[in-house]
Image: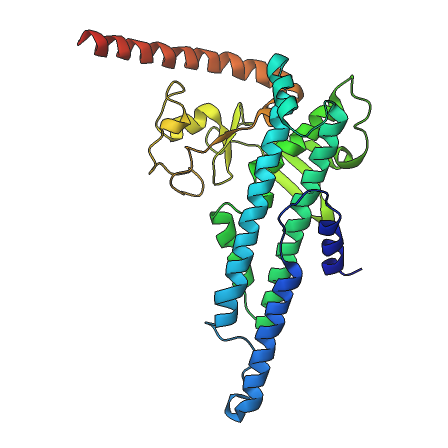
Length: 325
C-alpha cells in the first residue's frame, strides 16, 4: 500500500479531530507545478532545456511551502499540548492527580495513559514521515535540495516534531512504566522498541518508530561532558543539566532560567532566546536516576553543596540590599 493511502486511512480513523499534513493536497500542488513547466516547454521551443521548476516558482514559493509550514506548526503544537497534559497526569500525585484526571478525557488508569502515549508517538512519527516523503518528492521533481533546506529551516523554527522534547519525554515515560514492578501490562507495543543504551559510558535514549525511523537522543551534557543531571531541554531542542544551563545563561538556580537574558545563546547552536521556554524533563530524570543510581547519588551530593551555596549568596545579597549596605 502506498504511503499516501496509508496516511489518509490513519487520519480518517482518528476519533479526535487531529491536525495533519495535507499529503494529498501537497502532491496535487507539485503535479500542477510540473504540469505548468511542461506546458511552458511546449509553448516555447527555445526553453526546451527547461526540465525543472524555476528558482522562484510562484506555485511552490507561494503555495507549497507556506501550506506545509502551517500544517507542521499545527501538528507539533497539538502533539506538544497533548503530550504535556498526559505526562502531567502521570507525574501528579495526591488530590492534584485526581483533579487533573477529572478535567481531562483520560481514563483513571495506567492502561489509558499507555495507550494515549502510544497513540501520540504514532501520530508524531507518521506525520514526520509524511513531511519527509513530500519534501523528498519535491526535491525529486525539481532536481533540487530545497526540500532538505526546508527541513533545516523547520528545525530552527522548532516545528520539527521528531526534535520535540515531549517526544523524548514520552519515550522515557514508556521505559519507566515497563520497569515498574507493579506494571505487568507494558511489555508489549512501543516499550519493546525503547531503550536507554550506554555505549562507552555515553548514554543514549533510543527508540525504533514508524517506517524504520530511529530516534537516538544523546544524553551527554555538552557543558560538563557528563550524563545530564536534572535535565532541561531548551527551546532549540538541546538538552543540558539544569545547573549547567543556568551557568550558561548567567543566572542562578534561585533566578531560574526564565530570568535569562533574551540574548543569551544556546552553547551548541548559538540560537538566542532559548532559555525562557526551557522544559524540565521529569520522566527522563526519573529514568536516569533509576538507571545510574551510583552516579546519581554522587552527583546529587555535589550539586546539593553548590545549590546551597547559591541560595546562601542570594539571600546574603538580598539582605545587604535591604539594609542598604
